[in-house]
Length: 152
Image 1 (cartoon, rainbow, N blue to C red):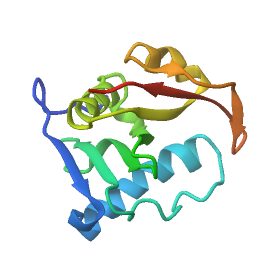
Image 2: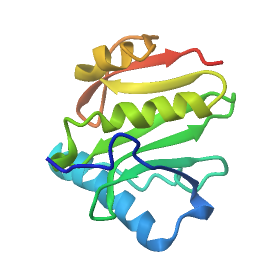
Image 3: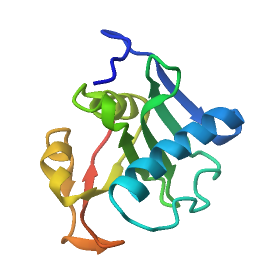
Image 4: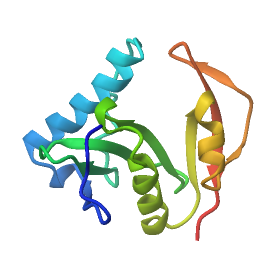
């Protein structure tokens, strides 16, 4: 298991324009490692939304200085914030890093947040205030459930 700086890990929260090339590479590498390689899901990871105005990249670094966990926050046309690309390096799992990142996003994001949760994670998101808003659907061969959380 990869340790992180506890009890107060330093959360990084940046817009695309604030990312240096090395950090962007490491964030994309983490996402590809989890979603494309581990989950054996060939899909367009580089979807063009990372660089949209208002998109936030939030992450925690491991002791090696590389991202151990990450989440992307998009701003939808209606002002809703979409949580996505929640990923944790295999060796860092079990430390609650995704929960720390999600709590940070909730604390720093006004209004409604939505997520298309992988079905097995519905209880995890529900424990953080999300409720299903529709039926299960397949995205790239993986079952998901749309969920939403009212914000402040």
